[in-house]
Length: 166
Image (cartoon, rainbow, N blue to C red; front, side):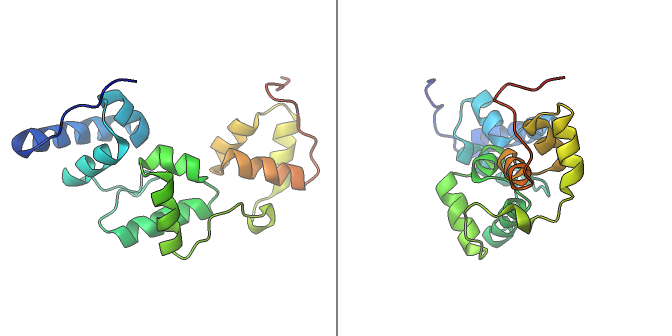
């Protein structure tokens, strides 16, 4: 693994923050990927983006306050995003995500598929026609695991891994 870059102070920190902000706003990559590209920790990239004034309403959850961030994380989690996915998109450590969810009054765990108001029939049809679970997750905005649980609960027989038949 590559060594982390040195600490940033003063003018160098501001310049790095603005350069990261420009890069982030252009690519809209998840914070984890941006951190990997610039060889910095995700938490540091996140902090630098906030210092540069970047605020988003998307899955990166870059908000003004901790309460707003907690609410945004809880909202994404309630929509089916897993803690792993949120950690990748936001650059927030999984333990911190759990704390933010608790702060927002959400108890992390696997939500039953019945709590989602989703019409299972189109998902089942698409899956049986050869669509992958990952593609269904991407198109629906739910996590892979939620899609899988919904289909299993509906009695849809799942293919073996890597077994999409088109």
